[in-house]
Image (cartoon, rainbow, N blue to C red; front, side, top):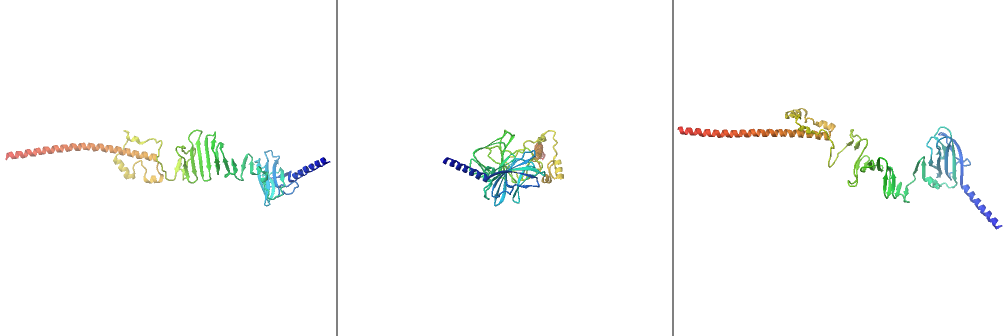
Length: 389
């Protein structure tokens, strides 16, 4: 008798537990015919509006489309205002099912003009608490998925730490195969190692104003550390014994403080300071001035050109330089040509001066000889006069 009573009590307890469990967790489904202009309210199992004091997981499938379909939403209220979050969206077509809120009413629709049947599978947690939020569903609330993209928008993510201080806070090593592009902050405590099989490799960090990039063109060669301040120019940073510095633009031109490079690979609107500037290759260097067949203009021709034009031949005028500027390599070559021509004039003048000096010395010797002869003749005449008297 006692055994029978114990069994009855246990059975009643199990029944009560099941009854409580079933009454606080409900599952049911709905079929709705909707399109992009005719949305339908999503109701509970008794066709009444969803209870604003409960929390819902809602799965939707559009039927008869012939395309991938499926969506999962969470619905909850805050201060009697409905909130929904899409945690998983498979379809990307206009007939994909969509959960919306209109006038604080949860509704189902699609973005297609044709009517489609949408089946809704609903899980209702009877919390009877208006402030119960969707965190009750755990990770389904935090992580969301759209087709093949998984994302998180609520806060920071910590790996190796329970107190992340950035969107992604990693305590440990990160291994990246491919390119690492960041907009915002990444905090790394440990090593950052990257590898890639593509022809160009780079690590780029952007804070909204400055780009900092480690870059190498190809699988071999030196790495470059490049910093670009938007609106403030471009610069290289790092110690020469630590990193080989270079800037490489495979296409297009580079402008510093200007968007108009005048068609040149590098345009600078401002001053340039350097320890040394080299023109790597320049053809037709003016050593031809020293060739035997070079037609050296006479000084009279040079003088006439200056009187007529106001500047040396082949050298741009002040007005031309002010208007068009000049090419540094070409100008250096032209100036060297004039220096070489001036050298030839100087050599010629030196030859003439030496020739004239020889003539002058000869004339001086002849004059001295004449003076000597004149003195001798004078002495002879004086002697003759003396003897005669």
